[in-house]
Image 1 (cartoon, rainbow, N blue to C red):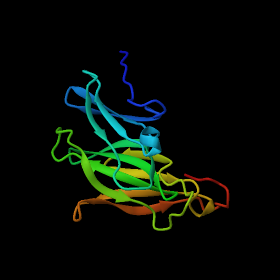
Image 2: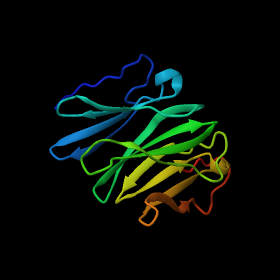
Image 3: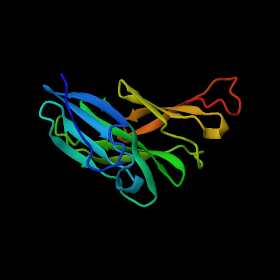
Image 4: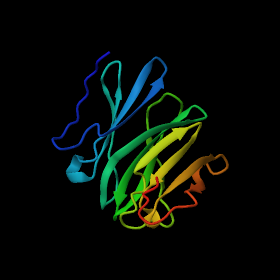
Length: 178
């Protein structure tokens, strides 16, 4: 089946990152538009059956660039979350949006994560991958050689927390791991 969706602004880089999740009999498509709003960025969530725009998410705060450069759905206990990476002051961050109840599609900001050792140009959020209620975040320039961060859901606090940092033992400067 062929479906057509479009961004709303010339130069928005709409669709430069996308992810899809099932919602009852429909699918939800989230498309990043990191070039929208003079580079601040945005996310668009669509129903793939009706092609209707369900929600547009824009970042809040100043100094945000490339919001939506990488997007990923994750599900934990039947609640869906959307991860969106972006740059703030040169370092990478991830905003996490959560639906209030299963299937409501009313995503609101839940949490922001960033590495403790983040610095300008770290590329944190360059890659995202989710599985079984957990996710990985690639940061190929952290420490000059790169790392991958593993996050799991903390049931006590109701947030995602860093569980592990992953990098090869033979890592050297310029490897760009992650």
